[in-house]
Length: 293
Ligand SMILES: Cc1cc2nc3c(=O)[nH]c(=O)nc-3n(C[C@H](O)[C@H](O)[C@H](O)COP(=O)(O)OP(=O)(O)OC[C@H]3O[C@@H](n4cnc5c(N)ncnc54)[C@H](O)[C@@H]3O)c2cc1C
Image (cartoon, rainbow, N blue to C red; front, side, top):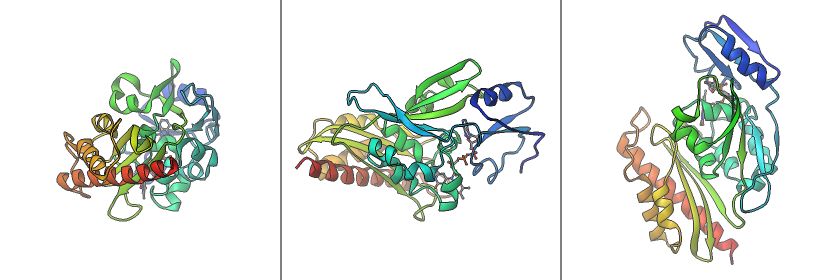
């Protein structure tokens, strides 16, 4: 339930951040409202509505990666549905975010849920964060002291160091995946579009039948989404056989203490995480090796 004293609608990012720091009481930004309004946020005194803050754009971003081609910048209030519809995004990320969005809730949720809200809501089973981790995406944050960019990886793994109260997510910057690389997202839930029990996002580049680079990210398993760096190192330079991909999936979940909740026991969640990683790797590698032929 919400018991608000104020609801501010802002036209730009500067006003949003300023009002957040100047208004008394406990505040929250609200974008699509699928969490803030439908799930409810007790003890919130004020909301700052971002829906008219000018952050609903998708545009080219000149990334300085090795591939020399441009990435895309996605404004924080772009909805999940619009993200999935964007051919500009699919051209850069190999269709990974489109796959993740297609498993995110129902049409109704996807039409309201925003990219920034999905990243910020801190819900460990959220679907976009593993995909953004596998893409090595960056976040532009705006706080009272100005703007800065942080990797999505740091945003989750070093949150207390890189994030301050009142920071607004302005946009997500997605660098292009390597030429010939392929991406895949897998989610395991009780129903097709249910909240994830486990999810995995991978980006794999191959030279013939040898893995050149693999990025593997897991969602819903631990308190935060994370990259499986040991499994990535294991795969680099290795022939892509069924055995090596299964071993990489095993390594990806080893050492993780999976969460337990009403959807899954810790043991079941751990096993499903391994299944999600293996399925995603198989699909991406199959597509990458066929594209080389
Ligand atoms: C029925 C139902 C099913 C769902 N299914 C799924 C699912 O399958 N997969 C999934 O991933 N999620 C799911 N969700 C969760 C939710 O819809 C998504 O996480 C959504 O992307 C949140 O975005 P929003 O714009 O609605 O966030 P809001 O509700 O507006 O905000 C959520 C949180 O993010 C903060 N926030 C929002 N925007 C910003 C910003 N730009 N900067 C800083 N903080 C910000 C808010 O302050 C708040 O704390 C579901 C929700 C419901 C109600």
